Image (cartoon, rainbow over all chains, first blue to last red; front, top):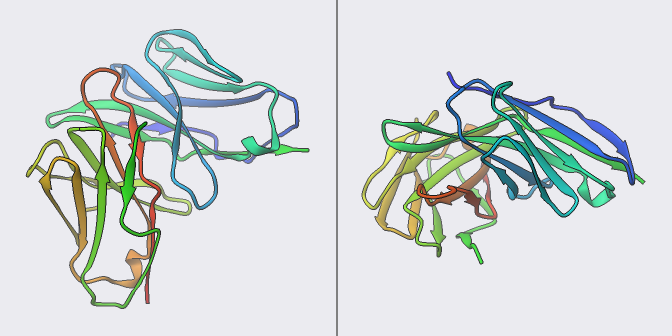
Length: 113
Length: 113
């Protein structure tokens, strides 16, 4: 059973700090990784995707991938109260039918004013 | 801009009713997915479709069926609604070629009484 694991949190950080969210996955052959943000009562919103080892930056967000250690992380710089949400890590897998996605349980982030 | 729409944001149905949840995407994606999300259980895959008229069971297909007659539309059917099907239902679509990002609709909050 392919798994994606995340700390459920809540992770609390003060406004302006860096929030660090981590995710590990079990399938060493995975190639595509995604971070979603989900506000309470809303649907997941794609915020970052990463496919190669190293860092990928988009505004205040940086995704980091280390395939050898099978982990992917998301850094949020200058955290704002509006960043308070649950962050889902997802890994794209391939099976007999084509692609599928395995989601982690999500980490709840709380940014304190 | 990516767009996945769902027919209803909120729905209240009675036990035993047949329920139709509609999902439409305008991105010409081949793959479409239905998930349900419950507190503490995360996202669970109900059914997915890799192409028109093709469907595959996900992790929790019991009590559900699907229909995909056109590429842009994927319907979830609850044959006889039960109270344990009260949940948030999320539709998603993805293009399997290239980067393969998965995009979600706004969700349907279904309550079965």
